[in-house]
Structure formats: structure tokens, C-alpha cells
View 1: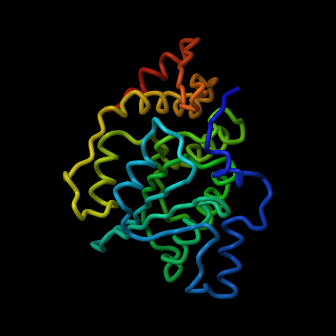
View 2: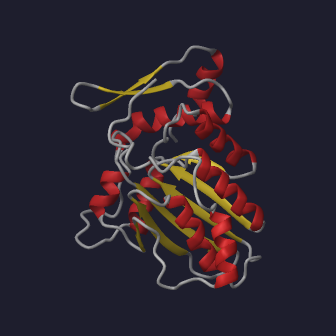
Length: 257
């Protein structure tokens, strides 16, 4: 058992009780028409995020209380990629609004071939994973790649199964590595007064390795090896427990690029 201080309020919404799935919301929107002024509860979104928000929420060594989701859509054509960011601080899941946002963008041609790449500060919970799977079944020409900064309640079976199921249907899931941070910095971060063109936080490497190992354990369906607790100052404490050869092989394959 482990404790994650500060994230419970952000993801208390990760429960099996919801009024509608993302696809049910899409179906209703198709029948009634989208409200152009619609903004989900406790959701903010836009094109560029500020530097402080990116640095604070995508640092894998801390446990922020909100979820940020950056994404871009690319087409098999010369069209310019479409990029957005979403922040959820309670209420609606960021992933749910992301699916609604994607549908609004693609509804004029739902069968167009395109790919979406997401950079999420917390990995999707099991419920959100199922919403994504349901959505992709309705959008067969859409491919999805997900990068995560950290894993959300990674020892909870439903969350582990959700990530495994996503990978099993062809969604690529990876922990963000240093080139990914640099790409997000150049692509999604507001560049006014930016001190440097690239964001290359090499001190993230230990946490990238730990989360990568745990993600490999999930995707290979082997026991968890990452423990997260808090000390007397409520500072996160990460520890690794590698007990068998499968986990050792996962550790080898999970080393940052």
C-alpha cells in the first residue's frame, strides 16, 4: 500500500460512477448538435500553455493535483497539425473532454485517416482507458499514441488493466523521455521570454526510469515494482523492488533512450 499526498482531490472523479461515457456524450452531441460555447466543468483549454504550468505539472518527481493533457492531430496530407491543451482540476476528466474535443474537430469527416499524439501529466485511469477504447472503436481510421509523465495509482488493478487493454488494441503508451519534454516545450509552451529553445531536464532521468519500468511491468502483466510513499514532510518517496527475472528484464528494456 502506498500514499500519494495531494492527488486524491484531483482524481476523486476516477470512480466507476458517471452519467455518460465519452462516446455516449458524442452520440448525444451528434443528435442535438454541439454547443459552441460548451466548456466542461473545471476544464480550461487553449493552444499554448505558460512555462510555469508545464514545468510544475510535467515534473515526474512531484505529484501535482491537476491533470494536463497536450495533444496534436496530424493527417496523411500536407495539412498543418492541430494542437491543443486541456487542464482538469476536478469534475470532468481531462480525457473525456479530450475525446469530445477530438470529435468536434473530426465530425465533418469522421472517416478521415489521422493520428493523435497525447502528452498527459497523469496516465489515464481504468475508466478513462475504457472510454478511449470505446471511442477508437467508432473511429477506426484514427491512431493514437500516449506519452505520460507519471502513472496514476499504478498498483490499482483497474488502472493497470486499463493501460494493458489500451496497448492490446494498438495504442502506443510510453513514459515521456527527455526528447519528449523538449518537443512539448517547443510545440505547446508559450515562448515569450523563454530563456532557451529546448527544455532538457536531465535530472528527470531517475523518475523516467522508475515510471518506465513500472509501465513495462503493467504492459507485460508482471507484478508492480514501484512503491511511492511520503515522508514526514509529505515529500514523495520513490522506491524500487525488483524481485524476479521478469522485472529485471523489464528494467533493462525500460532504460531511457
